[in-house]
Length: 80
Image (cartoon, rainbow, N blue to C red; front, top):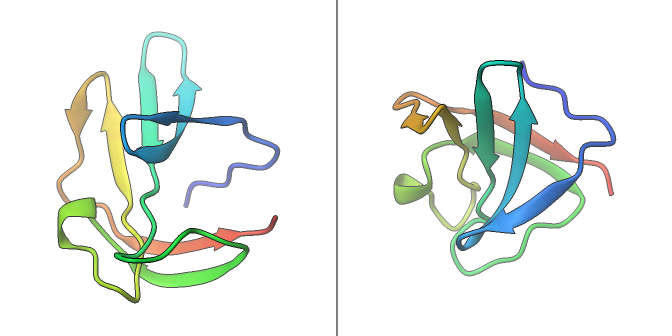
């Protein structure tokens, strides 16, 4: 589980992105909206890789030091 409370994100490329500096590791979490929608406050189920997202679920891509995790999936909650 990744909990980002009060995290500050940026738009890096086409998607909202959160950057996390873990000392000698740099993590990026990209959160593209479901196809044809914008992200808004609420709970999203079945988030997965951006390339396979549907109109119901957002993308969830995780990168560490430039390498993408190829099995990212989960539930995404946006509080505000």
